[in-house]
Image: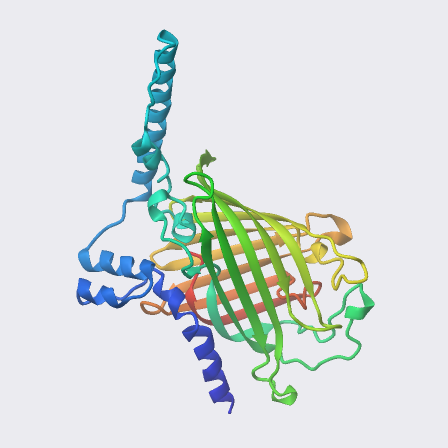
Length: 379
């Protein structure tokens, strides 16, 4: 019975995200270009044709150099136009530089952040198609050093009074995707994305409690993103954005947990590295209705994710902190390592230490170690 249940969960977690996997560049070698025609996803079909025909995308450095040259040429053209206007005020001539503008808008093409957010002009793949967002994985072994058997909160309505006997090892999986709903909102820049992430922790080995789902977190969000083109200490500023984020566990009191945030996104990359900085502001709730009034002091007021990706191996480090001192100083650190097994399936190892591994554990500190497989990593 357990084997059949686990198999069913595996099919849900992996089969349900096959469309996302097709949208990645990890596509098996096609027998011919004609074989690519059957793929429904535009992104998967394009990647398939590239492999079949031996096309090599423009290197990011070449795209950056071309964009920089185009920006300089536009400045010189504008200066020349102003000089001619000054010499002849009656002059009424339009200087069109569409080609230069298009080249300048391709800065960062092929970079790690561009591959996820379609920032460059020639990277746009259209609207209402599923894209990868956060990692998608299944961890059949997810161990906790200290299971949270009596979740509590400063709100007495959200404090458990009877302990639950939990197994220290459970199963965890995460699904995540996004889709673009508006493109080039401000000229040739500004895209609106809608994203959804769901992570579940399942007491699959706890027969005494009839193997319940201990905690599932739901995270829908709407994001407005912009392409950037600045440099900072050797890093390339690729994107900024702002999002409206809701996260909850969909449970009733006393186990209900939720919060709403306005999140700023700042993305930079260089060669095989990418970093995403996300400070946020929690939207206040009434004291009586707030399930977790002190959640910012544990799950933080911002996070930072640093990713290194090379030859199919990816290491990601995510840190959160409350940005407070003394008794209000809390945070967490999570490490994810993904490595290739075959064209689509990857091995995945996750280590978490600190507060807030899940919503129900927002003020509970423990160490977690998970081992399993993934379809998608960050990049």
